Length: 272
Image (tube, rainbow, N blue to C red):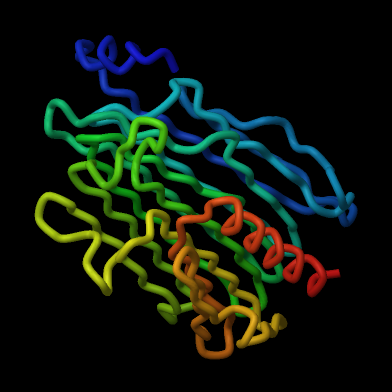
């Protein structure tokens, strides 16, 4: 997006309300994208079969270049029994300043049927200075379905020297396995009201990232995913017998992404 674009959009009175609904089904042992509904600026690519003919990959696109105050993006994803889907946001979610005081919002609703598998690659959020962002993701799944979610929260625009200069950023993830609430994770940052750099919050780290790997068949090595250094820290939490949360605090973004790729590779091996 052009640097002046957010100024132009600030002056308009129309709020953008993007919607994307995707429905996947199984036909002749092949996952197909059966139904698509989109409302700009959200849209989806056609289904691609990249590495595995049984696994469909769809790129999620946002044509406006980012969220401006009051904008809302809503996703609804449904997977039928036995389907294998990878969703890949084409670019990071850029959140522009909330000049009118209204936060930008994102809502994601996911439904996984029996033995369905969904991988959501690299949900990256970059809240610009003076921005406000709220996101809520709800996943409803079965005991034998699989869910893999990657998320990275940036401190702002690095090249402009922004370090937690946004107004607020609140992300929330719920995962329901049948009628059991397996995950209820809420991250809330309000730099104007809290010391984000305080020990126990972010400390001296700039990036916080999470991988949610919900799959009863996967076993991770505890020592490999629990380590700490001055520039990079990773820890693993066991979600009872249903999977893992791996969380990163880091100043080394390429390393975070590399270790996320390693986790996805482990996940792929377990499903083959």
